[in-house]
Length: 74
Image (cartoon, rainbow, N blue to C red):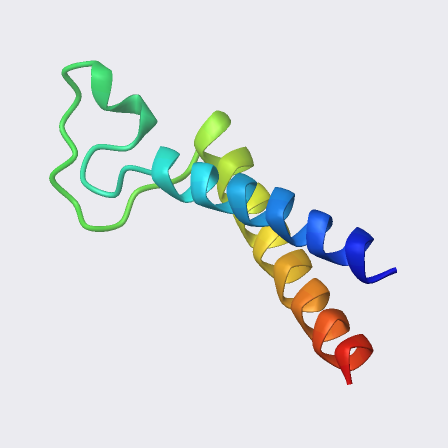
């Protein structure tokens, strides 16, 4: 059981790192075009919105798996 949780933690942490890196705060994924991003707040659309929710889900899963590893490790 501990091996399964450790492998799941590794996979989740790598996926979480990738999803955070893909969220380039200054430009965003839509920054390849010449659109004005003058405002601080912008609406998330398309893949940016999906990536935002994937990051939240992965972080919650990582937290739950970490708690399970600590509880089982005792």
